[in-house]
Image (cartoon, rainbow, N blue to C red; front, top):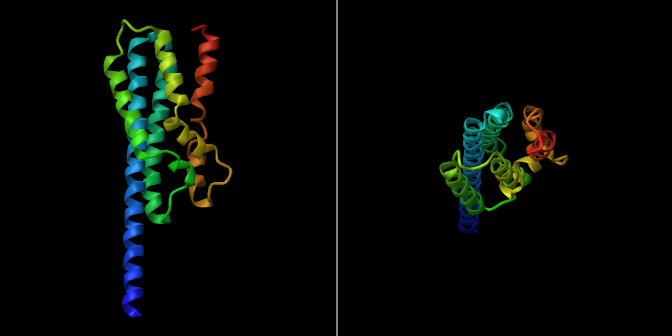
Length: 172
């Protein structure tokens, strides 16, 4: 009987380690996503001076999202579980998005239009990868331990609606 109990505890411990590793990999990819989006928005900042202030603000917010996710990664170790909202996608999905965004950042040039930049940003902000962060930040059912992340992100909300408003107001 003792062997079975020890075996069960060992399997449980290994399972917890594997889940923690998967969560850690997921959050690492999500951090990379936020930083890659930030790099793309910096590219737009460089290429379109008429929109520089907008791109600068949203680029800084993406960097803030990455910093929050880094803190979340540490919190997961302390709290012992991750909020469900942050784990909505598979790591491979986010990895593919990262590769795509890196490619767009490399290839986007002066020949591309201002409108192209905003259309790309709209697609990114509508994507499931960016939506995971927005869902987490707006969740009403988040545990008390994670509410601090919502408070820290109060001013960095809803890039999608801000993009749409900016496009409309500036007739892009």
